[in-house]
Figure 1 (cartoon, one colour):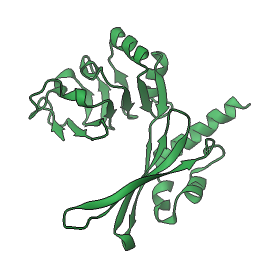
Figure 2 (tube, rainbow, N blue to C red):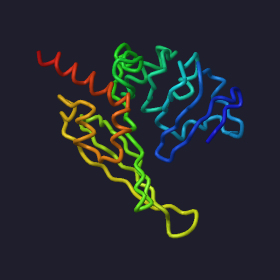
Figure 3 (cartoon, rainbow, N blue to C red):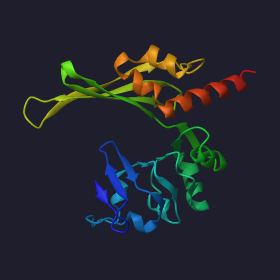
Figure 4 (cartoon, rainbow, N blue to C red):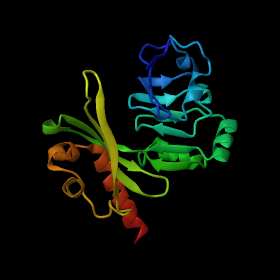
Length: 222
């Protein structure tokens, strides 16, 4: 985890998968990329995906230029502006940089207006605690560029010694048209277990995805 020396509310969470998440509030600026305990000015080069989380409303002048090398930009639904130079956007089009976000948000408009590829962002569905196995599962609906989807389980269990952890990952593929005619109740009934039903039914992101996807499918097939 990194902390911005310019704004104490800005935090960077690093992942070994190449993902970097930025958390905070309001509009980000170029100065926010300076870190308290990081001497390497090119520290961002270690990551190929930048995820801008909820609470951040925009990327101001110079901010995204610092991450110009990325292959994927994930924008939460609170983001309403991204200041990007024509040169950067041209480079991104050439490199086929992917923009991820929810349907009918700024992320999708930004991709469409600038000729960039767009993919709906993954949806965190639920956290499942299996007490009998002392297991905690993080369940995510994932979307892939080839049009396929799956439900991914990241499982955590106690390890063989104090302070260590076991577990693993697996994914259940979904039909390509799983969302067609599928309500949030159907999704809970058909694809997940009863333990997480309450979390699914209260998942507003999933609900928006199903409603918009079905409306687009209806219009396409009129």
